[in-house]
Image: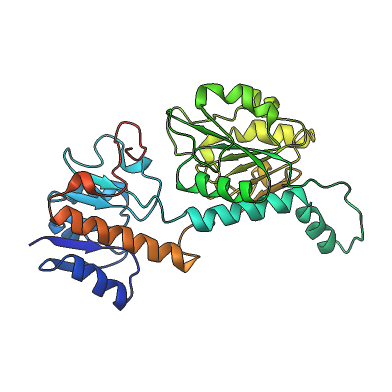
Length: 321
């Protein structure tokens, strides 16, 4: 009999589902901010995120199922004791965030951001030429669930899709070309749209520095929905002020929240949302998280750890293949 602590905001129907998967286990329901030391000290399984610094009290913990796709904060030495299984919720967010990315792509290509500001200023003004997704080249850097779903949608809309991933693999149908990260410099000048969906690792920090921002095609747009650390924001402000890029849309910044006096807020053609493209804003995202947790719970209790979804590699911070 396992003690299972659930910190995601489940409804009765979700509880019924999880408890059916974990027949015979003791379930405790709380919130990520309301979890107590006592609850953590008794928990053998946690479903949902807990502040990493609190996990030192989880002496009996055997498995942590995150409700996020990002797991880098939990891979740091000393956060989880050796032997704890870590899984994330990759697969839950692709629908919501890829649609957000498509929306942001159209906003920047069609200059909706500029026309919205013109409306706020009561200005009837023609903002000039626009671009089309059809016939464009999209470079997707990071091909997890989110990057892959965005690539599928861009391909369906008539864009030529190029993917970049960390390791070699078979090219999926929704990509026209596939490369590893070593080829990034040569691919940036080809792209009309560069979309980042990367975790925070030493290899991805400031992967888009000033040099690479200037390798991008003049007038191209840049999107980032992974981690704010992927872009050198000072350099981004500079190239936007110069009018070199056609625009940039981000749902993540460094730091978060972005300070009110940060120059990125006022950079030309810069669109910022406060890390809200995922979360639970789309109900289907939450439903998928619960299903992943339930399926993994069934596997874990049966002793089939290798069969669990989204096992995280602590060394890389990525989901294991």
